[in-house]
Amino acid sequence: MHRALGRPNLWLLPVVALIFLALFAALFDNGALLAPLLGEAAGKTNYLHEFFHDGRHLLGVPGH
Amino acid sequence: MLRTYLGRGVAAGLLAGLIAGVFAYFFGEPHVGRALALEGGGAFNEVVSRPVQKLGLIVAVTLYGTSVGAIFGLVFAAGRDRMAASDDWGRSLRLSAALFAGLFFLPFLKYPADPPGAGDPSNIGVRTVAYLVTVAVCVSAVFVAWSVGRVLREQGTGRAARQAVVGAGFVAVLAGFFLAMPPATNPGNFPGDVLWDFRISTLATQALLWATLGAAFGLLCERANGRKASF
Image (cartoon, rainbow over all chains, first blue to last red; front, top):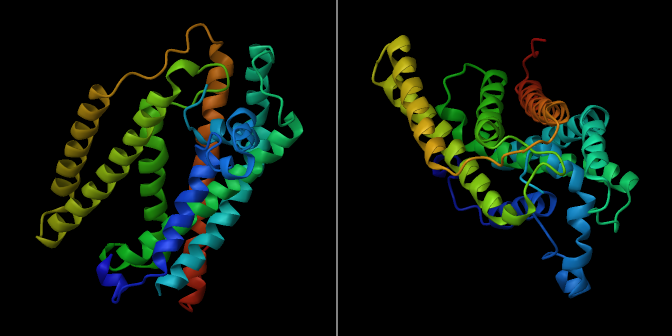
C-alpha cells in the first residue's frame, strides 16, 4: 500500500473503520450495536439481524 | 488518487449493490419464502414483518455492495501499478474476479449458503468463525498466488509454466486447508430442491454484484482517463 499512499493518510483510518462497521452491521450484528440505545432489549429484539435477515442468507453468511 | 479511487469504488459498489439487491428480491427472495414456509413460522421472531425484511434484503445487499466497493477502490489504488493488464478496464475486471473468488466463491465451495431452517442454531458461533477464517484464508491465497505469478513473470518465467505452477500450488494449498476445516452443516432431510434453488440464487446475486462492480468501476476509470471505453 505504501507506494500508492506516499505520505501517511490518517483520514483512511476512520474510513476503513466505517467500512468494517457497515459490513458488521449488515452481516453479523446480533444486538451489540443497538445495545447502547436499547439496553437489554437489543439482544432480544435483534432489530438489525431481523431487518437484514434475508440479505444475510442470500449473501452467503452462515445462519440458522 | 487514493480518494478518487475510493470515491469510484463507493459509487460503483452502490450501483452494484442496488442492482444485485433488486435481482435478489425477485430471484432469491422466493426461495427464502419457501424455506420459511417449511419452517412453519413457529420459530420466527416477529419484531420485523416479512415485507420489511424483504425491503431489508435490498438495503443489506446495497450496504454490502457499497462497503466492498470502498474496499475495491482502496485495493485498486494500492495494486494498480503492479497489475499486468494494459488498461484500467482490464485491471478492474481482474480485481473484481479476484475479490469475488476470495471473498465469496471459494468460501462458498467449502461452506455453501444455507436458507433459513437448514442451518444448525446450536453452533452458529463456531460456524461464523469458521466462515470468517475461510474468507480470510481464501482472499489471502488469491492475492499471494497473484503476487507469486507477478514475481515469476518479472523473472522471465514463461506464461504456461508460471500459470501451471501457481495454479497447482493454489489448488494444493486450498485443498489442504479445506480438508483441515470442520465440515459444512449437514442439511439433513431439508428438501434438496429448495436448498439448491436458494444456493444458486445466492451465487447469482454475488456474481452479478461483483461483475457490475468491476464493470462500473472500469468504466468510471476509462471515462476519466479520457479514452472512449470499448463496449
